[in-house]
Image 1 (tube, rainbow, N blue to C red):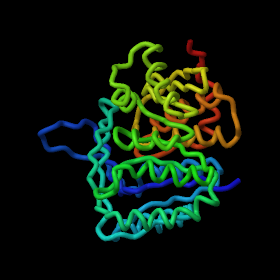
Image 2: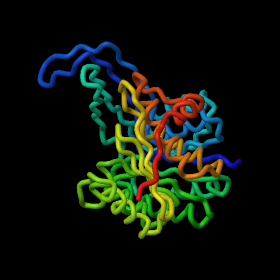
Image 3: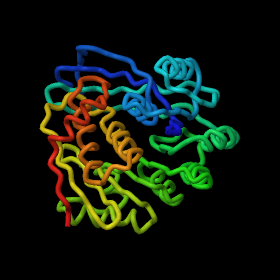
Image 4: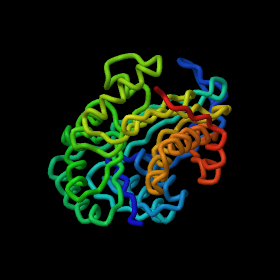
Length: 312
């Protein structure tokens, strides 16, 4: 199988801080603090690699942090194809409150790029896409990137008949959809913002997801937090309930869910099984402290515990 290419245009070093309880406006002491090279596309690449799939991680990098990210990926057996630009990668804080089970994220803007750098990136990616089975577009854009960057990247992939898996928000989601990706994976907040409505009953979710279908997206999977995942495939929708877990850290849960979707797609698994795997991957990852992802074995075992129903 050709490798899946994941794109991370605004990579980061994530500082994961574990606390007993976060008290805003007060001095807090951390139980632990762990740095991890990351970014949503890089996380997806890691999970897919652990699932046994060939991957390539690509994007922009900058400064000593960018060098560290590339070296780390190569040491993990993930080919890294990053374009160096001036500046320094951002450091994001992921603060996990053990008392509430919630994670507070503080994401920095990162380095800027100009149009010339973006054109260089397109030129670098074109031959790589000729050897890719799919392209994953996810995460934020660095300042200076064209606002329609995800449209241009989607078109580049579409010209080479490479399916695109899109996980983005607001303008990036809007522009990404205009290039007709194969699949879109919004979470509740992203779907509500895109549809302009609050989501409550099944019918609300279905109407919001059908908006993507009408825009030309073949498969839409919405993550619902503890309530699991709902997926619309053609005219049929399936809901996989959430795992019964003790939440530890939600960082990377959405990336694991997307990786599960891609893994199932690569094996041509039916939608009912796909949505169960997605819910399982997100749930298992959320149950782990710090930034730690589900394994293939854990996902497969947990998927058998997920209740799936057809949504009408």
